[in-house]
Image 1 (cartoon, rainbow, N blue to C red):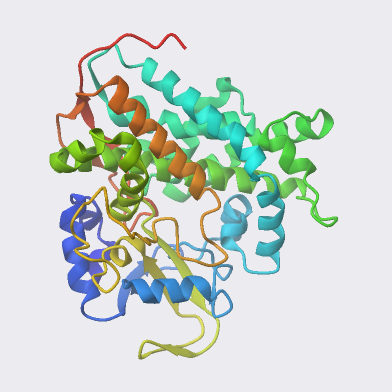
Image 2: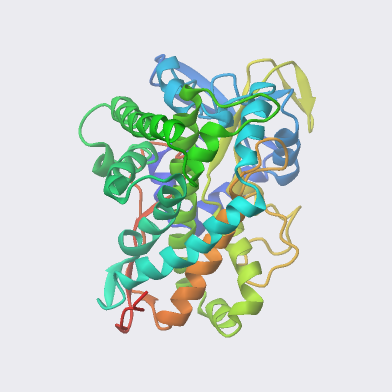
Length: 417
């Protein structure tokens, strides 16, 4: 049963179907061993799927015994050349993690973020303007895909002329191996190529901002000084890749899943749409809990230990399955019910508590709140008119993405903004 977690067909099922299978796995125990074939080493290996809420929380808090740096947060250990591009602080332990996160966090102050949050409103109107007169679109292509990435590119100071470069590269990195994005070649070669392309773009921009500071996030990052510590030139691009990939694709996936969930639960849509101001906060949290866009994060056990009756040995891989934890009946009442007014809702959709909790969680919440508010106001009869098409993944994906979602609505005029 546990081998299903790495089968492509499992992750291409509708969300609720795969969560029903995961529920069966969750009830067999807190940790379930999953065998897999490592394509890099050609060895047979295994990891332990963590499917219960309390254990995901405990592992997330315990960075000493559960490392993010040993082999990275992917299921397989990434080769050194991959970590060069994808080695931002998500793949680090303290003190390196603490140092980089502190420098980056200095640029995410309430004052700095206020300008970004204002731009979220402007970009939401802009993106909806681009398709509001058409009446029928693929929501992913028209809205879910461009909206959060435009926010990030504008925040970083990436020229609009480079938007499609960033979009194509991020699609490759988080494609899960989908041939539509990867092409016919070797997936790792394609991913590394995308990393190289984004790194070159960011290195050029960073060098320019060092010479000519502006008010964008890139400029703040290259000039940020925390107790004499600054980001080295080679540390800026990996952070941008983390932001452009994780910050973009998770919000993109949440928007798509959110619209699909509202189509499947029209009574919940009515509740939300009839009280947008009162319900948006809890509705956003419920979308993130129920859909859990980030599928997993891996940690590596650093010493022999016992947790919840299971004996781990140094080097064991543990893979936290956030969607499973977010539907654990030990932590949530009626977890299989999609309830836009759910409270409390201490979900793990932005990661577990601890040093690696998502730095951009508040930005993601703001993006989701704004975009659904604007959709309800401007395209109040928008409806899903076909099945959601999942990524054609090669195995357990980092993000459980939707690549197409057809919608229809009454055409409306552009806002003129």
